[in-house]
Image (cartoon, rainbow, N blue to C red; front, top):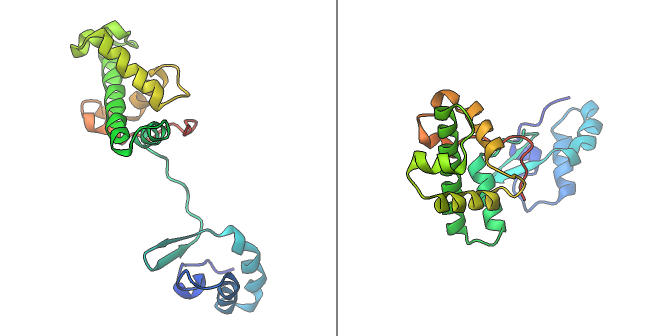
Length: 175
């Protein structure tokens, strides 16, 4: 069986065409022996369009960064889009700071140790961790995600920009 390449004649050209015509075009551009296989697979083959280009084929899902998961959860909790972007970046920065402190101390920091390390009040730390719980409602504390971040960026811990690009654990779901 021939793989579909996403050529406009295979996918039906523009999106305004009818699905029946699309199936006929796919069947026309394949060998007769493959027609039955293509027609059986047709409902399973997702298509994506970018402008006038239409791509068909199975594409593996990319893992989302922690920052995107936080952004979506904060936005769905009722924050405006702009505020949720700002707060998601703040949550990821706090998570990176917890991870950095963990590596420096050799153990998971308490809120008091974290406050001493970063020269902030304990009340500010409580607000940061409350925001973390809002961004990741399924997590009780930042410990598991800080451990995940430490395992992902262990060699690059000195670079704080990695906090926004760390992929989320596979079992972390959107709220």
